[in-house]
Image (cartoon, rainbow, N blue to C red):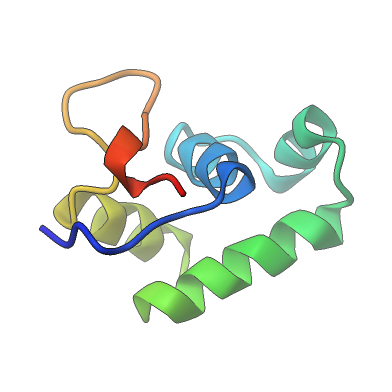
Length: 82
């Protein structure tokens, strides 16, 4: 588990929404962002975690301990929020 990886509050809400299966347009509306704004944050997280797509992003977040296992809806562990 990587404990030195931290996310902004906005990144937390986006990754939790992706892990819950929400579509980009719904995430954007919920967070008062444009679709492109959500895509920007997703692409930055993909780069930071060195993964090619959203399913891999969620899988890596679980494997790194960023997302807490056994919770629904998915939750980012508090120690990973800056």
